[in-house]
Length: 282
Image 1 (cartoon, one colour):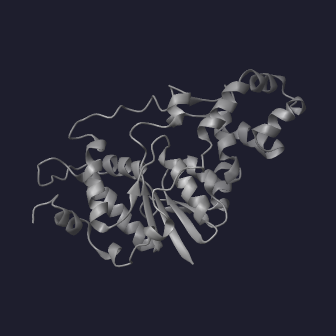
Image 2 (cartoon, rainbow, N blue to C red; image 1 turned 135 degrees about the vertical axis):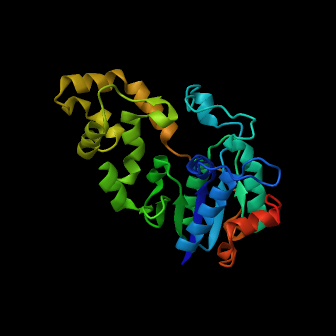
Image 3 (cartoon, one colour; image 1 turned 180 degrees about the horizontal axis):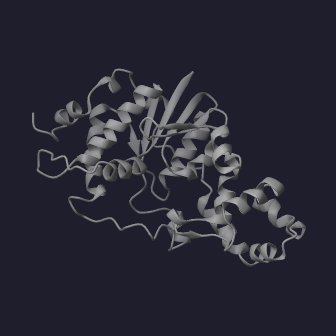
């Protein structure tokens, strides 16, 4: 069976940039440690998972519909800075390396990488195993038959399926948006219901199902304080749900057949690839 590896590009860039403390000077004198980490992690993952198809997906620079719906969305994250030591300054170098290798990468204006990943995953899972390379828990909602998430962490790397998500969060993958809608998501600057943490949210979902059923049966919740809090913050919960739930109706930059890769590609060495692209001296 074919296997499609979908890479969360910005997620991997940030982990690579901040995960390598030492600067690695390139030909022009500025550090390329983010590129080294990005390509190196990608090569290791390809060797471990042996996919037949690959797509690297990035967030659009102009933001997404979520930023239009909520000006606070991800506002706690640092603004992009046009500096040599900023991770975004290494994106063109990563694009160049991917192009040199013949590996497809793309972004779609108006959507986040997560949405395009969701679209490809849902489209391909009927005919291929789909593995998503990311540490973003928002993508866990996509896990199901033929869809898993690979969390890279050296020897402690984990391939998340339904069983692993249930063990970690206490709910099925499809309820990850409901869980986060109740508890909030600090990484995306989304506030949850005060007083409702993961344990309480998990108990509510296990008892009633998702937030639709929780609110439909809210009178069945015996704790008056909890019931009142859910009622008071109903609008915030539904707003969170709209922010967290991924959209599958995103145009494909490339059809699946064009994402095919050769096993020979990941047998190469990171530094050799970067020398070929001209980022390192010969």
